[in-house]
Length: 303
Image (cartoon, rainbow, N blue to C red; front, side, top):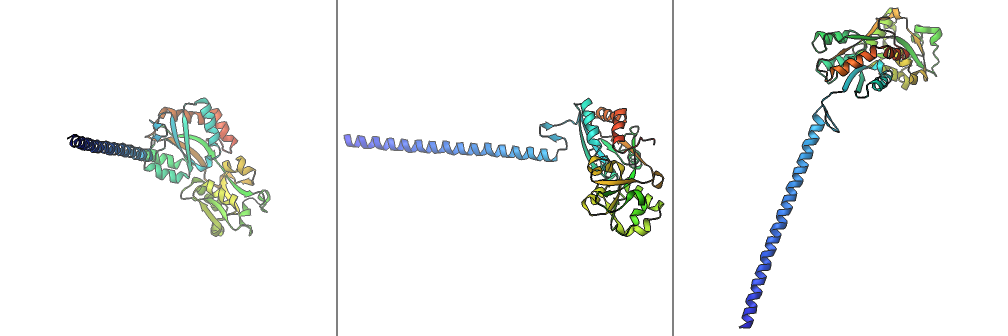
């Protein structure tokens, strides 16, 4: 009797342990499922957040920005060396305003801005592109401002045997000159000015096979610096900047030999912070801004 009672008790205990095991297994499985769901949720949230960060034009590392106190500028490539100094001085006066600049050819920027590229201000190397943007309704009607006049120079590296001071423009016809770099006239105002200078001196036809074109005037200068061209017809603002001045020599083309490079800026109709844009424009046109431009080879807009 006692043995049967002990056997029955053992069966009960064993059944209880099995039941407990099943319950424990169920709990563990539920925990794993819950952890998996939580992990999936986190991964999905991460993917969604990554997608937003990648695609939203105003997303930053610190979150979504309203665009306030931030200026995005499309600037002609002849401004490559002067703009960092302009921005540094501007932000000393207005530290709360962040300025972001992209450099390129005025023609390429015109095409991008005609399709509502996300820039607030456009600093062109001529007057035609900004006025077209105003006519198209893409730039604010009364926002046009002339900020400088550009000039052309011939530029060669220091180790070049070419004598710019004595030969001037005729150096381009020197048989040692195999390649002449200039900006593409279809895209860049400095390219059209260089083309006009060659026509003025009657050299366009004789030199046409030696011409290599950059998308913008800064790229044309790079061709000469890298040795891909022997001489460049480039912006005075680039040749007078410390990096190029220390590595080469220049000769100024007579201003009457090419179309005037009256450089104009405009504000886009979709500018995020018009007040910040107006402050930057006012600074560039101020005595301090104009002094910086002159130091970098630009002339006053009316000259």
